[in-house]
Image (cartoon, rainbow, N blue to C red):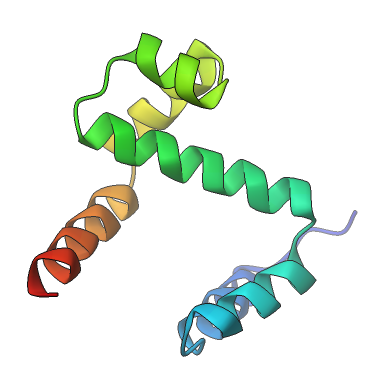
Length: 99
């Protein structure tokens, strides 16, 4: 597989920023990703939210079926990543509080 250029990746990010609502997101991501890939992303996002709320690993494992290794990986990115998880979690808290 030929390597993508950063511009190609940035073009994808730019396309995502142009989505206006949940329905557009559903359509775009369903065409872009397989059902399995969407579910995997949603599972990681659920784990991030649960970790943010202080849910213990064992409870997350029981509720999601995710391995402790995957949970630890999400936890690492939550604490040491680029800040994307934290940014979105904070935005959702603000949105929820304003409704």
